[in-house]
Length: 342
Ligand code: PHE
Image 1: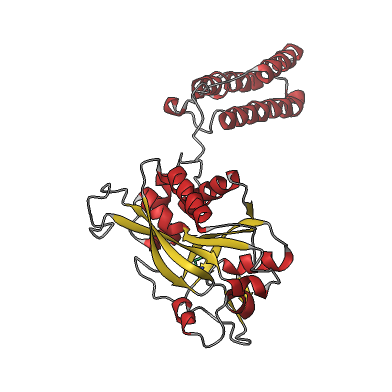
Image 2: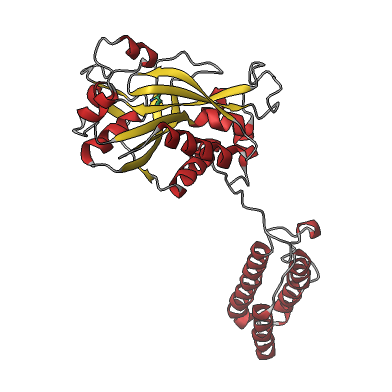
C-alpha cells in the first residue's frame, strides 16, 4: 500500500511535467493516463488488494489522482486549441493575419497636395467657421443684401436667425484674415462649403474649396497668372496649358476663370472637355477695391489677387471620377482604390 502511494506521487510529478505543443501530444496524454487501458484505470484496479480498513483512505487518494490527471488533460486541450483532432494542429511558424491598413480619402489627398504646392510659394494656411454670418460670407465680399449676384450662391440659413448661414465659399475666411491682419497677406483657405443645389453627378449641397489671397504693394495680374500657372504645372505636369476667360465675381475686378488643357484627350476634344479641349478649374481676379476698403486696407497703396478652386473638381481631373456623389457615399470599393496614393 505504501508503495502504491509512492507510485502515485511519482506519477503526479510526471503528469505535472508533461508538456504538449500539438493536438497529437495531448491525445497521447489522454491515452496514456485516462484511456481504458491507461494508468489511472490500472491503479484503480489495485483497490481490490488494499486491506478493508484502509480502503476509504486509499479511495480518496485515488480519486484525487484521477481528478488531477483529468484537469491536466483539460488544460492541455485548451492550450492546444481545444481540439484533439490532428487537423487542428497549430503551426506557430506561420505568418500572422494581415492587419487591414486604411487609406486617405481622395479629397484629403488632393487638398494636401494643393496646400503643399502653395506652401512652397510662401502661402500660410488659414481656417474659419463653416457656420458663418452674412457679413463675412457676403456683405464684406461686396455682395450686399438683395444683390442679384447672391443668386449664384444660394445656401442654407439658420432657421432661428437668418443672418447666420452655412458658408458658400471659403472667401469668408479671407474676410476674417483681412479683419485681423495687415498686408502683406498671403494665405490659402481650405475647407468645406455649402450650396443649395439639387444633388446630382455634377452638383452637391456641400463640397470643398481651396481659396487663396495675396495682398501687398504692386501685386499685379501678371503675379496672379504666374502663380496659378506654377500651381497647375506642379499639380498636373509641365505639359499642361492654361487660358484665362473674362468672368464676373463681385469681390474681384477684373475677374477671370482659368481653364487648363484637357488632360484626358490632350486638347483633341473628348467627353470630359465637352469637345472643346479645355476644362475649367478655378475662378480668380484682382481683389475689388471695395473689399479692401471694407477692411481698412488702402486700395491706392495695396493691390491683391484672389482665387478659388473646388477640390472635387481637381480630384475628378486627377483621378477621373465622373460622379461627385462618390466622394461622400463611403463606398469601400471606391475608397480602397486610393490605398497607397500619397
Ligand atoms: N469665391 C468664389 C466661388 O466660390 C471663387 C473665387 C475666389 C473667385 C476668389 C474669384 C476669386 O465661386
